[in-house]
Length: 447
Ligand SMILES: Nc1nc2c(ncn2[C@@H]2O[C@H](COP(=O)(O)OP(=O)(O)OP(=O)(O)O)[C@@H](O)[C@H]2O)c(=O)[nH]1
Ligand SMILES: [Mg+2]
Image (cartoon, rainbow, N blue to C red):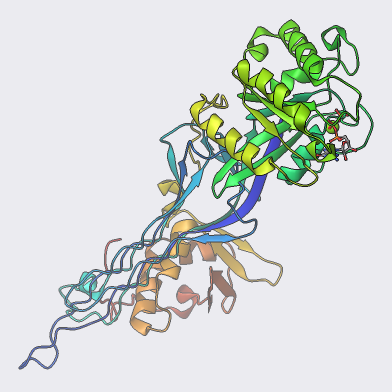
């Protein structure tokens, strides 16, 4: 088993900002508020695509971003939603949080789809903040930031194709020529001691996995040579590429080799012996005279087998072989990896977003850091450059019990308090003996 893995960033789009606008009419110098809402940001969604079999199309470290929502406009016009970004993955892909290693999603089957990071809500326009007292709210919400997350995609690869043949026929050389795998290659038998897997690209987005195992010899099924235990690695492949050395360098007879290996296969497993095979004549570049290949080829073709003369050294015939394999694979049933099924994403739960759920901790600089998803979101959606918006935030913090809890946590007059990127000084209102502040109670809303 071989694991294909890649780490990437997922960045959902932020919501668009709500508009801060007022109606303008000919004879009304300043009409009521009419700022529309911002659009929702796009989410990043994974979708199972049965035509994929590797993660090669993902660029390690790349940021995959969904678009942000558009801002709201005057006349109560909504901003457009940002489109979602849909990333396609092969069946069997598991997605983990890159830091915590928590399994976020197990994409086993078609047509499974999973949202990994949510786009931000659009900010509300100022029309939402009208109250009986304040008819002209002079602020609007910013859009909610999109979620971000670094994830690791993992795929356990099953080989689609197995390379079969006597030792030293050039199996590892072929794998190295068509994939990024770097198996050991040498001019003696049993160079390969453990199986190698490589991902072969037939065309853009068309890949298959090829396994190279140690060479087989007569009586392998009884333990000769390296034995037959490696044949297990070919059991779940769909197609065997049977390589025969036709160069004469080995002094062996390709027809005899073919018969011997097939006998060993049958002795190991009927299933394996009944897999379709493609015959490859290897090391043809060595032959000065190829007339002998004609009869050999006819022999295999009479058995209904396709024959490909190749040289991994000069590349002759290699491309044709790969394309043929790809075409054959399309027609063969695929054994999907058996996985546990859907794992539901445990984070992103709406419970975490209750602004009344937060924690307070003093960091090493003595700053009181207030953390909580809902609170942080409210801060992110506040336009800090707008005094009315800031005042509304203060009232919300009061209502959610932030000041009371700061006091319990031992906050002193003048302490710095931080919520996400916003920092302010703590003011102990009781110590000042301030009466209920009601004078700026405008445009509040029940969130
Ligand atoms: N001239 C020529 N030599 C080749 C070609 N393919 C492989 N060879 C050589 O043949 C020898 C054996 O190649 P390997 O790829 O190690 O053979 P193998 O089938 O993997 O051998 P085992 O791992 O021992 O089973 C090496 O010296 C290669 O350089 C070819 O197309 N042309
Ligand atoms: Mg080898």
